[in-house]
Image (cartoon, rainbow, N blue to C red; front, side, top):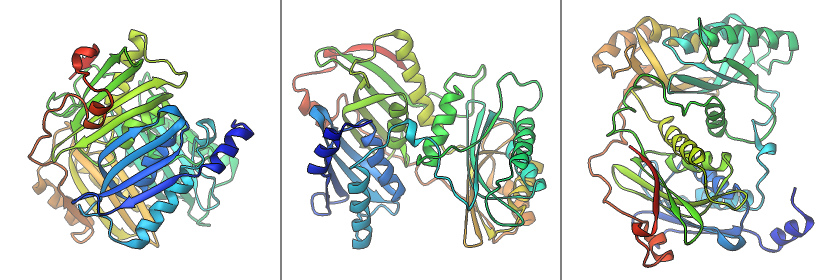
Length: 442
């Protein structure tokens, strides 16, 4: 809990947000200055992500009790932020969210709602799993209004929001909820699985769905490598390259990551570090047209750098997993349709009957319209030919199902760097000879 003195200092020093479209030719520059507190970096990055902005560069400094960050951002169209209402909304969100950050314990889950019941699922991934889950929910007269599904390293996690078919409201009957839990756990458990399957109701709080999915996967230890290679990620050209180094002179641990660039990459890394109770004191992010390079100077929340070999290994593997979870494996399919009870169950059944595996899914329903995104592969885990989708489109309806290609794969790699430009100035005359290499996997 914050002391009254801390609260007074925050009131006397409210966050200062400057949004500048003139400082850079191609991007909008957002500067955030505020009192520092554990988790504030994640809060700021969360706001930028919620506003559908892409971070192309970032410079982070939070030593001495003050948080001073600069972000270069663009819209999903690759343009600067031109709309003044959008700029005002970003500024208001950043000023409000940077002024107070709830503790980790207070921020687990989603806000309770009378409109839906939020269900969290985790278990062993297998072909057809989402189809079976949707079939159970449909049989129990539950309508899926929103859902996010991730799979990684043979594990699956989902946050599903459902309503009662008859009332269109949240499900409150305790016995019915127990029945839903029992049946879903049976589906998630499968046959002969050693790892436990879980179904819980989202606890009250304000955490985003993306953060909850990271937390569920982390708690499920998906960062532990499976015995056999997983699609694509075991290809060293596709896997992220993460290093953990010691900066003994400044008493930091230095984390560097190099990976394929994509939206929400910085969020995924910062989210994992925050939930593992590490603080980013300095850092930089630089993205090219193909790769992204992140460099963070961190300490544990208790002020100490990483010291043990086991801790180093765990941080490294957890960051690899955080980057990999949102990788867009397979073919991207977008579904547009009038929403109805059982729609998702029917769609996922058609995928299963045509030997497609869903690697990731985003289910959204607004004003009676369903807009769902699926990333699919074949049963062997390899990419499928677009022609193979034609029969599925005919079953679903050509106007409803569209094939999309991943526009985030480009051709020009990021230029080689050793240390970030911001950090290069901060730690002048320091090269990698000043650092002791702790661990590096690629």
